[in-house]
Length: 204
Length: 177
Image (cartoon, rainbow over all chains, first blue to last red; front, side, top):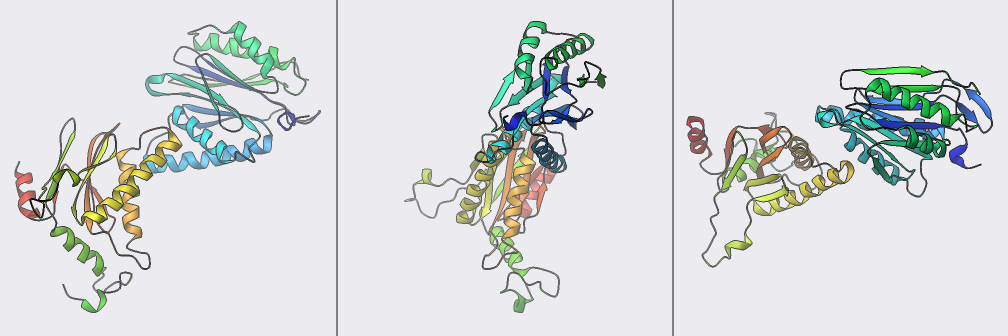
């Protein structure tokens, strides 16, 4: 089993009309044994920027702590929040620093940039950025997620419809992956509010 | 200036609470060629006197105003060679910021980092402070900005400022206008 599949994960981020959604599964496993069914893979960096980390959970935790550290210093020095594009460049640089002994994570970054334009991107474990206009996926269920998102995605969805689409895509995909699942965690972010919802899917 | 017993060692405070080397550095600045800057509503202007020691000097080889980034420029009063070193260091810092964040460095951040370099040279062993004051002019998301950085490493934001010879006359003129 590959190191990326040790804990199991599923992450997806999707762009809507002046909003975005980022969703993850809730399973934390050790190979085939399920250890937790309420694991948080998505973290808030600031009100308009969310980071999801798939892959090895210990690396995800450490990487998250390092990024929060960098962002807090940035906020203190520059007296402003980091733009999502800037944050993505920072994550990419930090991952590449460990080029020959990498963090075994695949991050998904989603945020609202200038003029409330939604921004999503993912990258591989050594920092190769992949920007997308519609959706990005990561984790053990990524292949199913690609298929589900490709067929369900529409442009300019309103927040409510976006939530439905992301939830259906996530639940359908994790059902085809034994290492991810046990429900879902969805954040839908608009310029005015952040809605966090828990999904109940097949609890296996 | 008194306290001559304390004026040799950079890292020693004099009894009056001054670092005498910095005072001397400011004197070096004060005898340098005048430079000034004015912040406008939609930009910043910086200017300096370019007086060459002889007509035989090729004036195109002397660059008293330099770019630190495409949207930040700097002018100085004081020792030219010290200025060149600071320009080099600041440009490198600006590029490092860009490499990390893929974003142009905000003026305040570059000024802060340049001032930190100048301050290091007032607290390290075996070095002397820079004999220049800088006027950094830049334009970023916060609009036009003008900063003065002194040999001690302190920096101030100005609407208009002058440095070097005849600074009091220049400042009086700027205050009136």
